Image 1 (cartoon, rainbow, N blue to C red):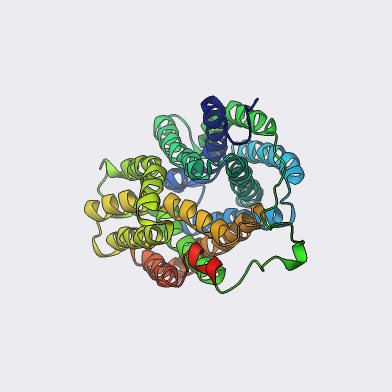
Image 2: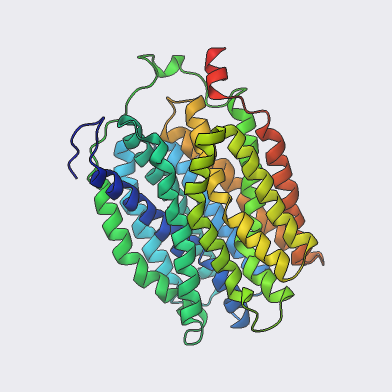
Length: 401
């Protein structure tokens, strides 16, 4: 993948790099992680899982995601990424294949744990690698476009699950994810490994010992805000189709359609929040993002039925990727020298709180609560995140002090 110069990449190079990054997010997030959401109601109907067991398995996957992000903090250099990225994609493929071979709860939990580790590494390293490549070429504002892959992954997962619902059963339901993941992962990985990129130093020649800490008065409110986002969005993005099964009559189009609505909204989300970030500033756009996302989860609680389902799918789908994109950009603007390490730390915080979501839901259900009222946990978490978003300083103001 030749590049004309670091400051003036060819359009085809920009497109190929962003497409490769989006494809990796499609594979690991759409076909590895979030395909579990539309699959869950079918696996419950097949007798493979109960709702509580499904929540527990989701927790194992999110624990893996957290562990993967923590590994990415430790192994954050470009050389590390070149080795770990293809290894993580291989783990994704093998663990997804393993899901087709067993209905054993322990084996499923183990496979989903390992899949989460691979997912966490890829979700940190692929965007971080691409962002550094774009920064060197003065194209950092394009970074949000690679998150289109998340929305496309949701859409593809929705289509694959719905299309194969009538002729697959149990673990067989994972085969479409395996079949599509193999060529997509191979193409995207080979493209990104061709990138010529040396880590640059934004510290002005200072040693690592004189650089500002990762956690300070500027970044801590951002981390806390991001923690609220992780817990807030994960409930609808894990349980929305299952909640639709509980609230809506048989054959209602939103039984499968809620995930389709969320996927379509997610595809449009990166461009929307890129635009709003450029018009309002990333911090003001982030606050608006939290407010809209909060309204979406609240709708599922106070408007049970088709209206609440539709609003939740649309509003959460159109915001959660924007939260990731805006927060990552704000964090890097506050601490430009941290690069992939900052991204990994933020994903770790996000991963910890989203791991807590299914676990808290399981405790709520085991205690006799309903899935509808469990969404109130997400409402409280997003309100927490919105509050701390108001304590994040503008990067220009922070660096001028």
